[in-house]
Image 1 (tube, one colour):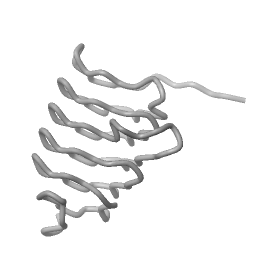
Image 2 (cartoon, helix red, strand yellow):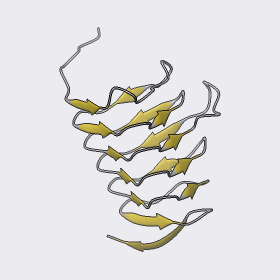
Image 3 (cartoon, one colour):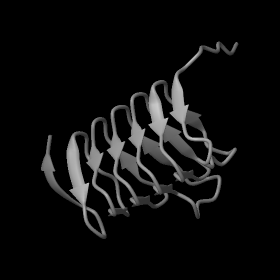
Length: 117
């Protein structure tokens, strides 16, 4: 049996979301021109900045998991098969090629953990 509930999702009209995107949590904000590819799972209370690309080149079997409370800065790119732990912060222009631990701050290209919050 499937139960449905209402969620608050704030999304700009020009934010393309691939129909194969698996889930978007409540109170998650997707800013302008953000692109979510197939297999993306977004937790609750996330903030996705403008021009962010998440697994745009992924195929449906690939998966990107973004736990709750994650913030992703403008123009960041997340490749396929990564997980961002709860409360992680991805700084602007970062290229995320591997998973990031909970509460970590990641920046650079490729992204490296520079600290914890």
